[in-house]
Image 1: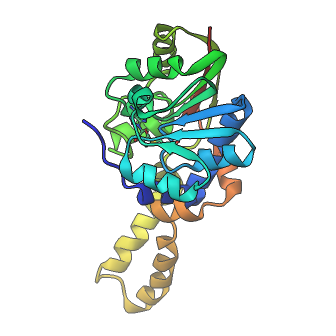
Image 2: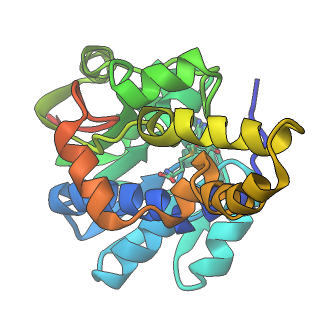
Image 3: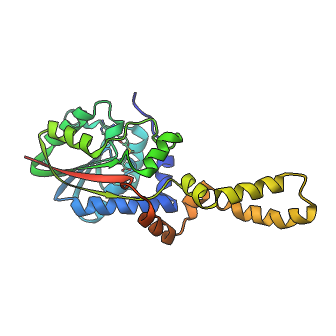
Length: 264
Ligand SMILES: C[S@@+](CC[C@H](N)C(=O)[O-])C[C@H]1O[C@@H](n2cnc3c(N)ncnc32)[C@H](O)[C@@H]1O
């Protein structure tokens, strides 16, 4: 079933502390790998990557089937050509290849037919051109947490690197390399790991009548301070130094990985 997107809500997450950190990490990997001059960002969403590519001087084209996403992307990228279509239907919507790089960043799980999507991407590449596939790693702590706690995109199939490579092989693409990134736990998980118990206890004490009023007056400001530490606030205000520290200590693969394939 086709998903209907709320572009503003989707895009807002990238303005939180965690979202901005994740975006920077993903864009660094993509920018390192991209080859020009012609680049197609297929499933471009709200167009943040398009903007970065355009600013670097690539001949950038966007493609996005969702109306709200496509309109948002056009609004923030008035100088970039953005076609509203599924990648599988791109040719009949006037998109002309070949491209030196095609980007599919967290798009595969949303496609009705991921194998057809991969073949469509391959067909638009120049010989030797690159396909960059960014995906959410199913074994990463953050993504396992999403599945178990009904987090964002928990309903989707997350493609393991070997599944992505099999789809690409079926589209006559050869594997070049893979890198992974964003080694963070989900924010509500982090809250529980670091602060959850203490905050919960303080909240319960303040809410209960059994606590004498003198204590209430001490505990109330503490509770107000603790509100700053719920998962949503953490996502908004988390200092960069803590995010960097978490990257070092969280085990397992990164939540996001980029696979690079080449057209024969
Ligand atoms: C999670 S969003 C990713 C957006 C953007 N690439 C990013 O990194 O922020 C997935 C996007 O894939 C698009 N999409 C889904 N099926 C597609 C298809 N068959 N062809 C192209 N894009 C598709 C959706 O409309 C949505 O905008």
